[in-house]
Length: 183
Image 1 (cartoon, one colour):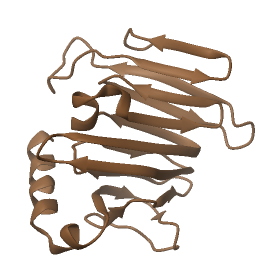
Image 2 (cartoon, rainbow, N blue to C red; image 1 turned 180 degrees about the vertical axis):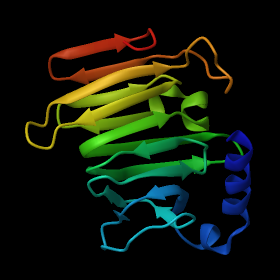
Image 3 (spheres, rainbow, N blue to C red; image 1 turned 120 degrees about the horizontal axis):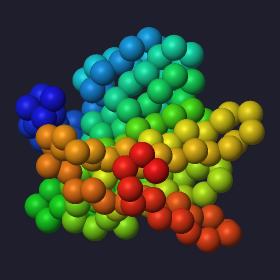
Image 4 (cartoon, helix red, strand yellow; image 1 turned 90 degrees about the vertical axis):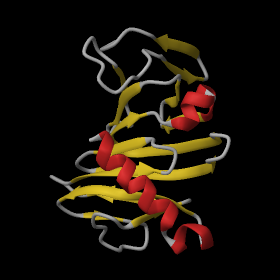
């Protein structure tokens, strides 16, 4: 998996569209029907742009691969907006802010979070999730807007060299830190 991801990153840096637009990643896989905010059906290799809203229909899912190596996997009946994305590959400085409108998203943090963990945030209707260099999953019920957050890992068989990290979940009532896998 890591090898294929590196190939896609090299592809990103060698395409002209990256240099001349706000191209911030690619679609890594698609199962079913996944669309952007223009109603265009997305397929493997299609670019992801700053400001895109990606929607997966019932029974569909997709993976977004960002140029800093952050990976977001969106599940069935999910809508996700990329609100802010800045990344300087020469320094690994950047910021990624996304909003889950409905559905579920699994996030594997990349170089932005590795350099400055506070610069990767995911918003939900119930609050903000701040990744502190790890993997987590968040889901939003489209009817109740109830949000659930799970710190995934890494677990004991960490083959991706991820640090354990943590997830900070914040809203107007305060902040809770999840720092144990599967919490």
